[in-house]
Length: 373
Image (cartoon, rainbow, N blue to C red; front, side, top):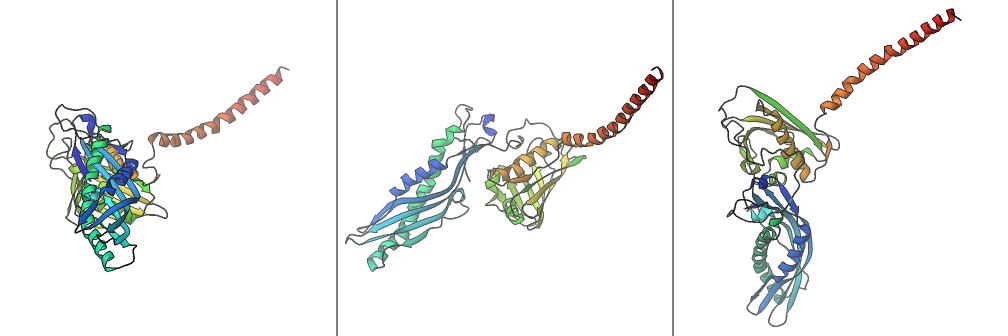
């Protein structure tokens, strides 16, 4: 996932995004057909864009613009040499994504040749396979820059004069996303050790397998999809991880794939003691049609329970919802719902003696009246 700095107004610290998929398809259709190479009287080129399938978004968080995209691109290519021999075929790039721009993976090119094989045709085919990939990679790099230049301003809030002015688009964050990871906290003195702490637990069920969710929680290449920021993860016991652009760091203590992840957990914020680690236990309970995920964070400094709960809800559970995982059960039962249920027995108990008393009073009234008739 590639990033670009933008004005440092605190308004730009909130997560926003903008879906630019239609624009991206048009850009590919217009730009990739300009790719060609001539050599020794032979020419190979891209002639059409047959398919662009996937999603493209531009996001903004902590005054940085973030490009998020993953597309399958299918092209047609042709070649012709000086004696008039021609060749044509199809080229599929299964994944054009921010992972390649971040250097996490390489582009894959799947070639097919439609023209009957001859020495001349084979020479054109070899020329296309050797020269066009690097030219296409240059266009894919330019795609990210074009996305930022075209749509960045839609997410940008005016900031400090003279700051970097890269443009930004707008993504909706989970409605319950906490603010402590997304905007600066006023610096204050925090004691370097804590004597009193609490345990915060949140959970949710998603329509996904435990194995799939486990990979998204530990795989360095998949984590950026739901955190919407750079991540590092050495998914081994003793290995380190860094989420949300360094906002949360820790080390893995226990890994039981695909059911349990135990790690240290530290929030890099002035409000969190600088030398203090919490302990995060994530359990994944595979059920018939969903998986229940529980996040249990112990060692939370007293007074920060509500803020931490909102962070876990907004950034972990909300993060999975933001990439399309359907949440099938609520996290907690509201206090109002509990109080409503607890009050019902009292109402029933009250009604059990009020009604007989009314009938008794009516009977006494009738008896007294009959004496004077």
